[in-house]
Amino acid sequence: MIDIQKIRADFPILSLNVYGKPLVYMDNGATTQKPQIVIDTLIHMYSAQNANIHRGVHFLSEQATEAYERARQTVREFLNAELSQEIIFTAGVTSAINLVAFSYGERFVRAGDEIIVTVMEHHSNIVPWQMMCERKGARLRVVPVTDSGELDMDDYQRLLSPKTRLVALAHVSNTLGTVNPVREAVCLAHQAGAHVLVDGAQSVQHIPIDIQLIGCDFFAFSGHKLYGPTGIGVLYGRKELLDEMPPYQGGGDMVDCVRFEKTTYNELPFKFEAGTANYIDAVGLESAIRYVRSVGMDNILAHEQDLTQYALKELLKIKGLRMFGMSEKRVATFSFLLDNIHPYDTGMVLDKMGIAVRTGTHCTQPLMQRYGIEGTVRASMTFYNTRKEVDLLCEGLEKARQLFS
Ligand code: PLP
Figure 1: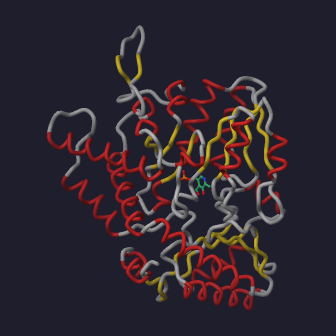
Figure 2: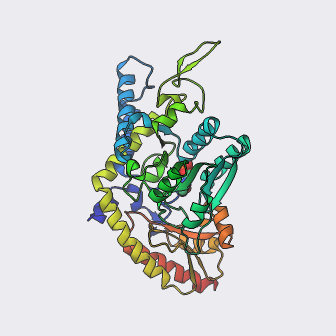
Figure 3: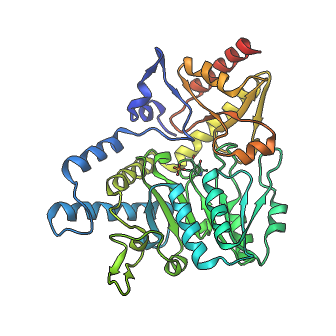
């Protein structure tokens, strides 16, 4: 069990008032708030440990390098990856997926090959593959989603073939809240001889992750959705594959010996970390990971499951509310429409009550197209949200209904 009042006190922004009302922050799918300890870590790094890493022999540089490499170890442990060389720091999920789409594509994808994605993917897990398919003459195949917002696993199996090179799918849908059966998806893909990238942008903050159990070849997440800083993220990649993949970007740190005749590259993971790494935010991310581990991922999961059940029950009581995403395996992310009210209007009413939700397509336009809608209201909750906040959300929705219906 978590002590919710103590947890909330760890996040300074949660005590803000908005328009004179206590902030109810339910836009965690877009980004999460930061505990004081992460903010303090960033201040400490800039005020006491800042020097460029990997290059200096002086005290500060060595300290910063040590902190950065320790952060990599902490990420490795958090994901239960086997090797720290398999942990590459990136700017976030988007840059991690672009790295794989480019570098894996260069090495492994040929004309006529197929890449499988799903209808529920975020644009970040669609567009880089489209760009790669265009470059390589490969074909993008798409797994459909059922009415209740789950992957159609029969269709998935039908799409897998000897032509499939790679499957890229979200662990958790940022719009529907669905938790996808990634382990099963990986097993089936591997049987077909394909590799798998799991987009963990919406899972690492809610579900304990064990990369070795999932068995995927690549896994990506963003620090800012895990209570850490913006501008830092992680790509996990299986060493045998990363070893064979060419560098994505050239520059400092990723090289071994630079000659005009021929340049050789650094070993893993540095081969994929060109230029000055974002070592400050990597250490900030480490602090966030230490924080969630101190709360306990299992405790977070238990609190959020309770919140999910409560929120679902209360939201479904609201007349005229149409929920998108009714999977049994889900997180506390709810996308819905209220009567014929435009999502922006609903969002505006909630905003004036201090309730922050997101409205629009949530970077999942193909999914909106699948349901024949323009957008939704999305309330995405996490372990610092409470049942009382769910009640406030429902009150706000009733108010919007009365105003606009
Ligand atoms: N994938 C999913 C499922 C997401 O929800 C998001 C962001 O909302 C992304 C990828 C992109 O993350 P970022 O903008 O941090 O790179």
